[in-house]
Length: 447
Image 1 (tube, one colour):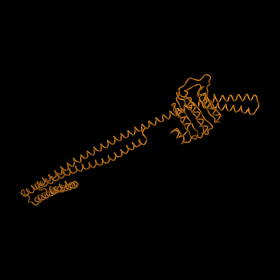
Image 2: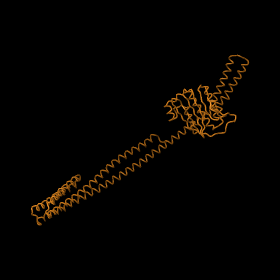
Image 3: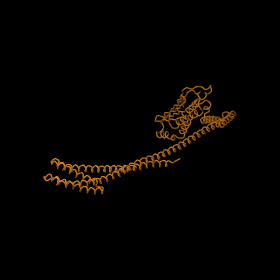
Image 4: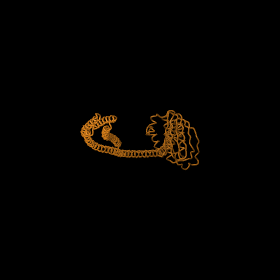
């Protein structure tokens, strides 16, 4: 059997592992998010390069159209395009500030761009001054084409670098995602394994505890059985041995009384003998009433309640069915002991002046109810009794164990108006008692 400490240690390990896995997953998600941001950054740089190429080409086309047509609107649009080219270049420089190699290329691209824009301004100025001719524009056009080719070369180099970075960062992103999936799957699997181990340990612990409780109940039931056997033996010994000796003493004293009539000592001895015989018979019957074996449960209940009322002075209302019905010996004995213990507690602890005793048979179940009008049990004692069955003392614990042993159930309800004990047990009816036994209706027994 695993100790509670080991079970708790496994649970703590599982929880700790889940926490560590959660932290690892958190950092992995952060890394994945960072990789995603770098991928988006690379895509933005590629888009900015494409935008720069398109804007530079547009500025060149507007220059050519203006030189051909002389339309001032085209000149204004070309100026705007030149501003957009410089803005696009500034954006590329800003976005690649973290990459040394890209910054070198950016500086070269900036020089080529400024050279192209300067050549465009010279060509536009020739047109505006009216000195533009094919011969004057040709060198400028050749230089602009050469600068454009060099710029395209630089841009291709930058795009290749960004594509390399994009591939690298996407690989890193894929690796981060794979790591996250691996961490989560591994953590879930190991946590599941640990929780399964914890569940198995708890199951083993519960099974062992149930086995111990079953063994304890079996031992308690065996002790109660032995107790009943000893009571039956002592009752028989009191009746057959001590009772016979007391009867013999009484006969001897009566013979002496005939020889010494009126002697007060002899009269006292006869009275003491009668009292001793009566007390011995009462103790013997309380230990194990012969009526329980001879006439059955109902007759034994009536005899015990009548004697209890006389001894205690408590008024008892008794409601029992036809006494000719018999039940299994174990059932009759358990219910009789439950009645004994219940009424004894009423007399000792409740402070009651009245008690109600009832036996009801319904189908294959018999119910014994004992209710008093005393001050009831303390709430804490009643709660402890319902939780572990020990707060009520040995008597109630033994009563509960007896009833549980034969498949029954004991209910205890108590408040300031009194206590009610209800014992329900399954029964099988046996053969009826001898025909000479008289039926009984409800009756009242007064002390």
